[in-house]
Amino acid sequence: MKAFNDLDPLLHSQLRLAVMSLLMSVKSAEFVYIKEKTGSTAGNLSVQLDKLSTAGYIEVTKSFKGKKPLTTCKISKKGIEAFENYVTSLQKYLDT
Image (cartoon, rainbow, N blue to C red; front, side, top):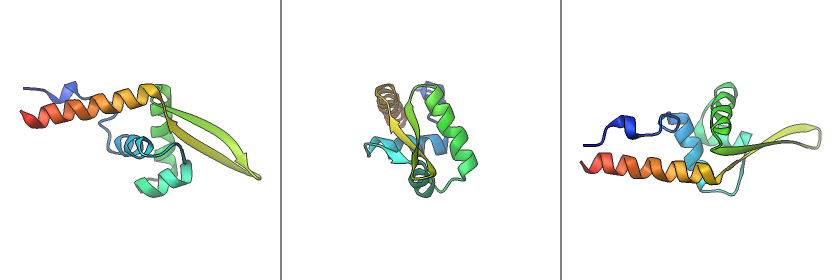
């Protein structure tokens, strides 16, 4: 039987998993869009995006839209692989 410890702990967080799921379905997403879709606070989302970025699962680009700061996130190849492995592990766990 598979154990929960086979699941990537970084992706096992509800908000980080929601962010990764969202980024799997789009080319890239702005911070405000991710915040709205996940229902998270700006502070919590910033912390979670930093964790995903540090792990190499997402790429974060900071720029400006006019005079306003703009943060855009995109899933990386490593992130896609990690997400797919997580889903596969979860399916194996559920099948047992």
